[in-house]
Amino acid sequence: MVTVTEPPRLKAPPAGVITRVWTLLGRHRLFVAAVALAFLLRVVTMLGYGPALWFNDSFGYVSGAINPDRPNALRPNGYSFWLLLLRPLHSFTVVVFTQHLMGLGIAVLIYALLRRRFGLPGWGATLATLPVLFDAYQIQLEHLVMSDAMFILLVVGIVVLVLWHREMSWRLGAVIGLLLAFTALTRSIGLPILALVVAYMLVKRTGWRPITAMVTACAVPVIGYMAWFASAYGNFAMTNSDGAILYMRTALFADCKAMKIDPRKELELALLCISAPPSERHFSGQKYLWWAQPGQRFHAFGPDTTFTPDINRAAGDFAKRAILAQPLDYLAVMAGDFFRAFRWDRPQFPDANTYRQYEFLPEGKVLPNWSSYRGTSDHDAQLYDPGLPTAQIRGKPGVIGTQVHDPWAKFMQGYQQTIRLPGIVVGVLLLIGLAGVVVRWRRLGGPVLLPWLGAFGLILAPAATAEFDYRYVLPAVPLACLAAAITLRRGFTRPGGSAGSTDAGTSVATVPSGG
Image 1 (tube, rainbow, N blue to C red):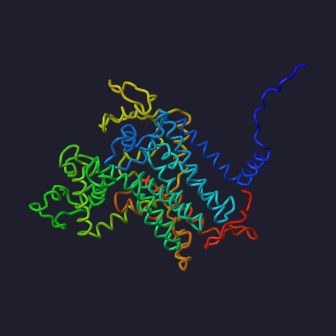
Image 2 (image 1 turned 45 degrees about the vertical axis):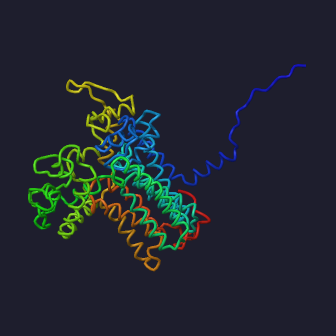
Image 3 (image 1 turned 60 degrees about the vertical axis):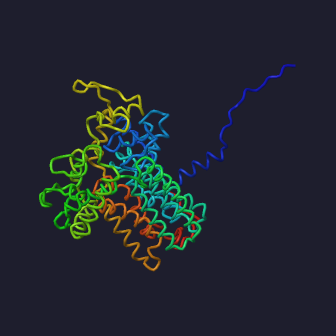
């Protein structure tokens, strides 16, 4: 008797699983189509600009991943930790691909919250995700070797978690606290978000256990990072740049005569006085921090002293003195930068070089050979990704950080000229959210309050402590969309359909299906 053994067969996924997946996709077909199209745009970007785009700050982040034994004096190392995690793959293409996925993930979080928690129909929730999915400058930001995409994802994730749960356990509070810590370590402006979330949870009477767990879970990593920073620089802090950045904010108006600085008694502050009168100064404070030019005093203490503990402290003291002595001047420059975010057009600011770094350009990028912690910026980038090519540039070898490939690049250049979110639309979204807070004043703004304050604060904070930059507006956009969508959701809900949850936090039992 001969026994024939049947060849092994791979297990096919159960038919029920496939059916459920297709049913889920069909129920959210409009959003799925939008995400698919947005993903295609990001693929075109990757084909047109390989492996990545670069900003001046990119090289400090890459250096932090190449030299993980020392914190960066200028900015927290959270994004460098992410680059370090991806370093075994030796590819900036992988880095920007993960960031494009983060951008799509932000849209998924917004859509899921609006559908499941607030009962918006598919078209209404999809509408709220369109700025994140299709704004050309959002896509360009994701393609930069920068921390912004990760920062936006973390901020939106925190807001979504807080709004999703009416009742919060201490475990969930701890998870939110860890996300807040990662946010603060990604960009230092993330730390005030902890205070915002704590205030919101107190207003909503969440209870002391989740709040305590959240604050503790946030504090432990942040304090640990500050201790590591102290071991390298001697001061218990996250950066040596907060005072210097605030000095930049006040550089446009600071008048040492009005501040009554006595050079004989306050030499450190007097050395930071700008000789040109305020009426004759540059329109951007960045000139007085980054650009070592005649009349610029921040580099008066010599090379390699810009971001040391002593200089940072002196610059911070100078800036605070200027604000206290000239409060109206401070409010004027802050208001000017705040409202600059809401213009219809996009004028060049703060200078041509910075402005161009947010554009899809027709030419590639040769990486600069700036000095870094243990080498140069171009060498660090090539250590991270050995696939970066080298070419002779003006008789010297140069590392090519971005190669332009048409027709993909030309398509994205044309797309960016056409599809962008004007600042005035962001302002309209904030006004809608503000109306939602006001009409819910008896409930202290209800669920609109948190995303609205987050969006407002993310635009105001740079204007108050640094200077306007176009990329500082983009983190506020998804939160502004959330606040506006929650405000308008009763207009979105179909008559006779599920009204979704109420402001009191009733969970959604059924969600209107269809696009």
